[in-house]
Image 1 (tube, rainbow, N blue to C red):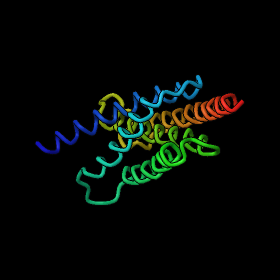
Image 2 (image 1 turned 180 degrees about the vertical axis):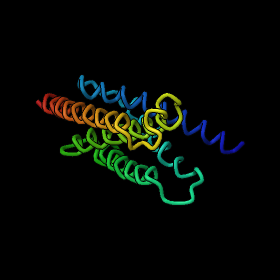
Image 3 (image 1 turned 60 degrees about the vertical axis):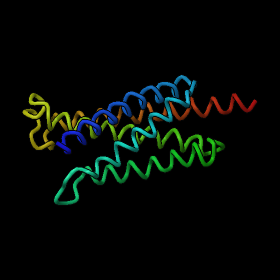
Image 4 (image 1 turned 45 degrees about the horizontal axis):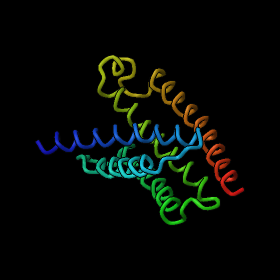
Length: 163
């Protein structure tokens, strides 16, 4: 019963983090940041990463590595926003860290979809098959393109505001 409650909580905050993250990413791209959404994204994504470690595991798993990397990247995003108030280079650090954190959450979502959705699981039961690898490659390329665009546009906003 406790594991089911943890799973539900973990999934709900993951979805909140994903939705808020894509809103934040869109706002970076259109150079109209809304800090409320950013706050929701950062905290929900941090909670997702932290609660992932509460699930029972007999050994260190790839999901643990992604969780550790996500927490480290989120640490940079928190430091950039709350410690350095997005000044100077910390503005770009914030955008890049936020995009990477959203990528990690999206990456794990795809892993879970291939694990739990029967049609996807049939295509890639060990997650080393071509459909899974192509899906993850497309996701990575998508995030690289959006991340570069978001960083350029968000930096341009800072340059415009400084004039």
